[in-house]
Image 1: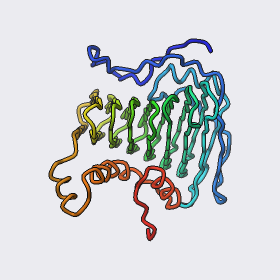
Image 2 (image 1 turned 135 degrees about the vertical axis):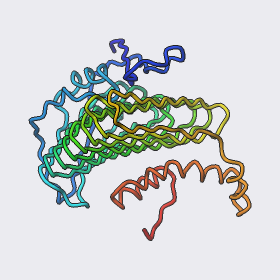
Image 3 (image 1 turned 90 degrees about the vertical axis):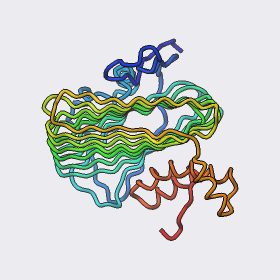
Length: 357
């Protein structure tokens, strides 16, 4: 395989040179094949596989290197175009599977017409024991007053790296919802860049993760406000144990012209063991005066009072800590709209399943 290096997940403005947190460097990043994908639309869903959108103009969170690799490896990819509002129970489910050693790349393009809705579930999983990389480039274009819900679930074991790269662009009053679950002991890299062009368009990004072993999780989430009255919310919550490493970059970028736009970003990190490394970079860029931006992070070990309370109710300390860690992840799982899939992911993440829900 050709030796290649990529720079991904770059901050929009370099601010952390000394600590080397501005971007991630990925070695041996030549993608020479595609992963296996299965597509499962519900019976009532009506979508098309063609689109007239020029997706090349939409940036992604991982950046240009990943975008070029995706275009070269899988130029055709899969396109899903929703022309009308869909019933709440309808969705498309795509399962990307990596079963052999090596580096695989796939592309997925999503479009909603004006007033249309679309819900897409994406799963990425690697067969245990293989080595290499699996990458997916997702780009989305949302028409006026449309809604796109994108739920991604990725699980990788030690020795195999997963890359999930998202880019989105919204028109007037459109809403792009992104919900992500990041699981497993393999290294993972996630990027998401949403451009809010249309007036009063919105994006809501919720990320849940659980990392263990010596795994690395590198994330870069950007909400770029171009239109007036645009709204963004970026929330990440998860747990770190053993000797795992996590770097979260969250950027709110208020471009000139984004009058009365508002954005918020927050992260809640649960540090279970002393050997973990956590890095968090909240960044707000203001090119427009009349905007509102907020960021915050809660980072710490299990709260002694909470653990003591659970122990007083007969729950052993180790189990109490597990319950607290699960709460971070299940807060994201519970945002999944479809009951059957939500229960499936609750089981996958080891959470409590409410049979009477």
